[in-house]
Image (tube, rainbow, N blue to C red):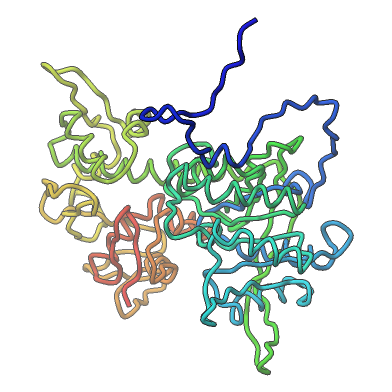
Length: 487
């Protein structure tokens, strides 16, 4: 029978036993436990199919869509028993908004019980105000949650609670931040809802849209995606639900309400109004809208560049234009045929050529021969494009005639014979009024008008009208084909 092996570490110089390492001193061991000894439990939901108990849920969407307003509504319902039938205490950790000016009024507007809606403050030993920093503050947070019997924690925004040394784009760093928080959920039987932002489109998977590492969606048990349609209706969908038996989407809208403040005045804030369940998914809205934006921007770059090169250019040169604009080359390759662009092999490389029937190429070829068009220079470059001027006819017409106006001696006149001070048509006046002081793309601008009004304009493409306003100095064009009003 062989002797047992002695695994005590030895000092190679003296052959004497080494002092135990820190790991050995902790007396760690591994046990294999039969499943029969594990007590199984049923799954509870804070919000059925959306927010499971004892786990992290992410509320994700673009900036400005109302994620904080939605989170405030969830918090308010929790404090009044609207979610579980029994009121619970909620810790709302707001790091980007004022507690007195924004957060409390928003919770009050949502109908929260202010005694159960607890707002987190961090103070240092020196009595200074600090910020929650995880995972370093995880034990302090656990103590505060237990002391106040909190069952729901909302991190608005989640990344703001991450220690400054951690990078939200690194998998390991995100796991260092979220895994202790996930353990805390299980240990204290609480729910954590973290608000995160969607970044520039990288995938049709909403989990990969979250700004930063994919680990955000991997560790969370549920991801609620927020999107908005062309009419401004919000759609919220559990686009990731490891524990949910089905996907559920609900529509919502934000309304403005005025509430009294403690200083005897009043303030106006938004609150969410939930609609019915819908078969639409937020992910479908995200994909379709982003594809439309990327395609229109990519099409502008490709068509403009090919026209500037006489209608044809090497594929590598086209690719450089797309990469310089920060767009996906694969998207361009997959959709170029829709833009009337064909490819052919010439010599050792591929060449992209614009078909003669492309509408914009035909429009530019017609130039000033278009009857009823005002004379507007078309020497326009896409802001993100490499500095290559377009070869165009002198003073190519870019405006189009519309039903609301006629051209008389170079001056725009309305149908009733009147003109506005700037000589703008009814159509131009309406579009100029709809423009904001921040950049808007053409799709967003079209959404400002009912379809019937667009039909009355008699203009299928608003871009020429916008270019006319730019030419007059009443608007300006920003990167990515966006426009904004001047003044």
